[in-house]
Image 1 (tube, helix red, strand yellow):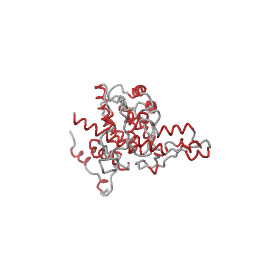
Image 2 (image 1 turned 180 degrees about the horizontal axis):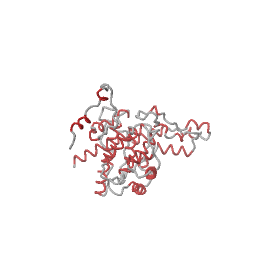
Image 3 (image 1 turned 60 degrees about the vertical axis):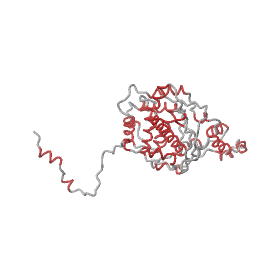
Image 4 (image 1 turned 180 degrees about the vertical axis):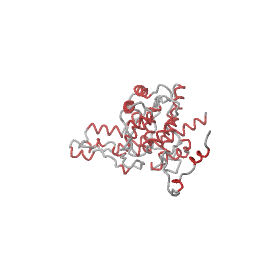
Length: 362
């Protein structure tokens, strides 16, 4: 028989509770779990082209964008696989006119690629390049690392987004090889060369198979991301970088280095293909992407053993294999900057809205 009095005594306040200062805040030992379904995502998406400061995007909102992207890619690839082939360009590049980021006018069209390339070409002084055999003169042409103060990205206190490529400037003089790399980085002759990954589509398709699970888990990708957020608390920059990587991975793109926020459009001959993004590989793909984005941006990260437990990976060796596979998938091109992330917000805006329009029309 249950002793009701003892149960009441156990449930009642103790003497310590009665004597406690009511103004004193109690420490909650369990973190509040984020529910992505409670975030109003539509206003966030509509504001993306007008975002100038990445600080206005909260980590939870950036996570909601990543979750939206993952779910849309899963749905899109299912349609892509069903129809055999689809014209993906209208989904990724809006042909209609829309306002530039931060502009109130809806009549301005995005900056065309040709104009962007002309400005980059005009910045090159070939007379100075011819003089670069002298190492003393070459010093002024070294690639300078952008200070972290110039990035309005909500990083953790010791994060240095601008110092990820210090090896480019440490005691290296600019030579013909580095000039060629610089020209290929900022000045491309065609849209296809600018966007398409250097790794062949067939090779990328085989690499993506490494991320496959043996069976589809009962856990949804949304619940998986909520778990990662509650136990790891990545920053906004990590989530947005993860969006960029996942987007480029899905459409076989590479990251283009930008000096300013830019809008690109493919030529009419561009053949956009889609890598397999399904429920078998999305979990391990997302876990590797978030891990690499964190290691790239944040100075301090959780240990591999803890991350494996959070991400549901069997061992550190498995995590390392996934990270290495992702690096080869991107040809080790992981560069990210404020301008790249802002431009990617425009890409997400177009992609999400085009998907919504097509779903409504169907």
